[in-house]
Image 1 (cartoon, rainbow, N blue to C red):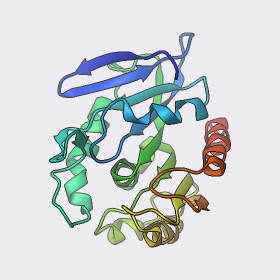
Image 2: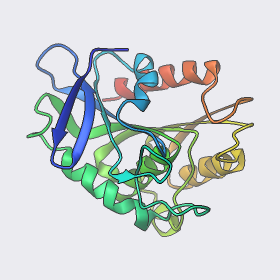
Image 3: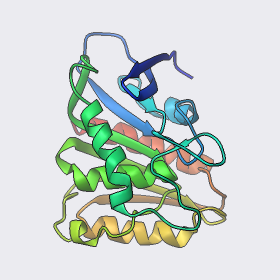
Length: 219
């Protein structure tokens, strides 16, 4: 795990790892799943390029079972994009040069797990010009996005999707539908599916590493 520092900006609490040098460094925003926090995503850090500024914020909403999330949770319902929009907008406002002076903020890289994956999809549909790539891990699509998808906002964007066939929290059919929908939105999708639960397999971890290196080489 790389060396990290804890920062607070307004309502945001996050951990970050900054590479050496003045930059500008590519920024990777890592968003945890439901009941996670700013520590949950660092399992993926060693699979990401060392030249990147890694930022992992804590969700803005307390989860009813402990930890944090990205919207006001309602049991048994998948969130609509309107429910994720406040968090997406708050992230958009956080990612400014005053807060990250060594970062390349023109187009950022997004990595999200589970509910965090739904949020990075929402962010990319709402602010496509700010996104360089997406890594959607064990996630699902927000509801009510079809009007945005039809405009092909993700045209040519590299996107990595991974899911387990034995995922007990997010059925694998949701990932397969996500792949089709993201392609409809214009994305260049790489899909890794394996016989695991709500996590990444070793082979999909390796695929994530290769994808992240490729995505950052395109800048």
